[in-house]
Amino acid sequence: MSSRLLVLLLCGGLLALLQGCAHRLDGRVRLGAPLPHGLEQAAFQRAAAGIGHAPILSGNRVDILNNGQMIFPAMLDAIGQAKSSINLESYIFWSDGVGSLFAEALSERARAGVQVRVLLDAVGSRKLGADLQEKMRAAGCQVVWYRPAALRTLGHVNDRTHRRILVVDGRAGFTGSVGIADPWRGKAQSPDHWRDTQVRITGPLVAQMQAAFAEGWQEATGEALLGPAIYPELAATGSDRAQIVSTSPLGAATPRLRLLFELAIRSAQKRIYIANSYFVPDAALLDALGQAARRGVDVRILLPGAYIDVPFIQPISRARLGRLLRDGVKVYEYQPTMMHSKYMVVDGVWSSLGSSNLDNRSFASNNELNVQVYGQSFARGLEAVFLADLAKSRVYGLTDWQARSSWQRLQARLLSILEPAL
Image 1 (cartoon, rainbow, N blue to C red):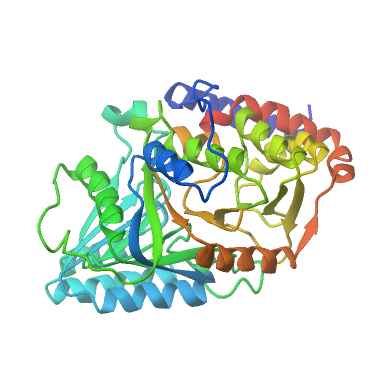
Image 2: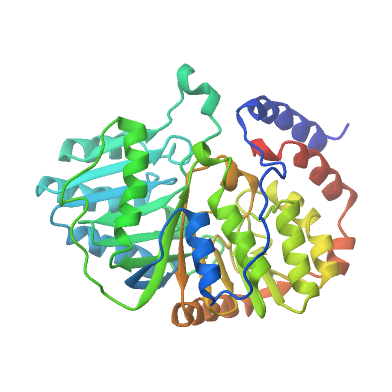
């Protein structure tokens, strides 16, 4: 037995222990009929509001921020201007250059009397050292771990908060898929500087983001957040119509984002642009994407290439591309660095961006959060981002898929068995 196969099987045995703690949708959830035709129609938007359990709100401004050189200064500037409250929830917060900048900014505001709450996933933020934790707590920040290892939570060890939420004074919100760590620094100019996209939100929609943070905070601490520092009166700041859709394992029986994505794909008439770093769709989503391509929709999917931080995801992801490629879906792999963005644009009128991957973990095991924007203006901006990234990508075609090595095919088969726990 080769050493590579032995390592894979040993790792697989460990991951298999987690499968009892993992959730799988297993085709239990499907869209009913009839489906609305056209994403601009009121019928689609009513269905999306119902599926997402969130109303679509007018009067917002949603701005696209690309890469750390735009994202981190905007977030730190908002933190620096906070007057009453800062609520931060993140899967990743590490002790490095970026982490130190955020720890200092949060601490400074706490010393100034601002309520600062920091909710961090105990697995994703395990690289946050005791020094930065103590620095923030000594300044007055409340730093709380989401589901730390304990016997009483062993049955939920696989359920994590993957959300990225920053809400300042209840009036400005940031979300996307960026981590508070050095890999996101810069402008995706080298393999050490990842490619990612975030949004800054103002307007009535921020209350929905705050409610999502409050949900996780209450689960972790037992404290229900109330009052004007948390939910101030919010006036219109722009013309974007949008909704926040959050999910958790408690709602895995009705995975809102999973159904919303399928609804948009099956309603598409012109084009579907998807950028997703960990692309492992289930059979229903594969079927929806393939059907869209066969009926003439321009379906393009952007994935990581040679640079990927979770290498064992790629064999599983590539294994599922064959049927899409045969149906006419166009697949691209980003070349300069790790592509970590997670967004979708459909027909130039509907956009979704946030923390959710197109995989079972995001749909059934993680706490996730995405913003859905309804309108051409924002969609045009996100499509421009997508097309600029395609210019730095290579086509992954059917011949590439057929040329996969025997080792890659074996990896895919073995790892697919363990997919719920990955």
